[in-house]
Image (cartoon, rainbow, N blue to C red):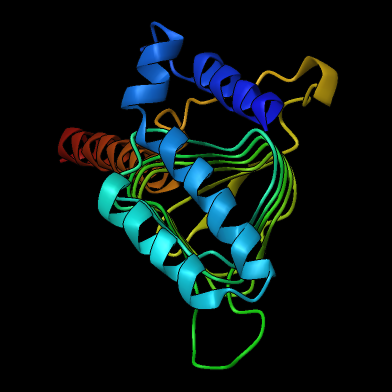
Length: 223
């Protein structure tokens, strides 16, 4: 247990430059509190103590602003930055070294029983306010931009932005091995395909306007 707590504290220092001391992390980081309480709730959930596990998860929500269903499976190196408004559904599966920012929803769709929430791979970063919905799979080393809405499977090594979310980069960065892990947390510096398209259209319009002006000048000279 103490080894796991030590690893959780280490993760905070690795991914949040605002962390100044171990005591500050233990007392003031809701993401740290949330994962500890979830482990307790998940332990009880697996032993069919369903009501007690839900009560702990509800206390977790009240205390931290982070709602994690006790049935959710979460790997090692999990980190929630700030965390207010984060929701993680019952059948969600999260791999190792995953980072979530505030307002992220890993939610379900439909009323069917069984698997209805996302499966998140290893080394994934999900930006503020992003929504990942349904029994979809997010590949390893993927980065999901702030505010994206992801409704379909995402291959590994992708950058996803937009509503609905779509992949704008793939296999452009060589990911380090787990022993030399260096998670890229720059979820606010992602490509904007819509802005790129607008710029392309502006350049084309400017070129056409220049061409039309030259044609008018030539016609005036002929007259």
